[in-house]
Image (cartoon, rainbow, N blue to C red):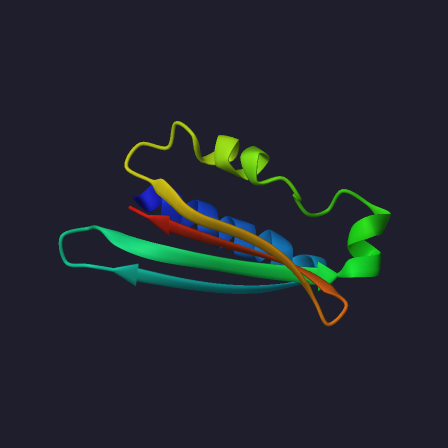
Length: 93
């Protein structure tokens, strides 16, 4: 569980420090150590199409989560909205 939280925080820092990506994260921890996490990030569509800065394949994202013991990727969504490309990930641990 600590690795998951550290990973999500690290992703947030990397995305947030680049200046071109927007990022939101919500983590719910229960007393028994279980919980859920939601990660939402987005970038301008024109910028996203200029380079490979954002995954666009649900299967690639799911592969990244394979092998993480005790972590389940429960939702992956992509959408274009207001000139931005959005990715929403939900996990349970």
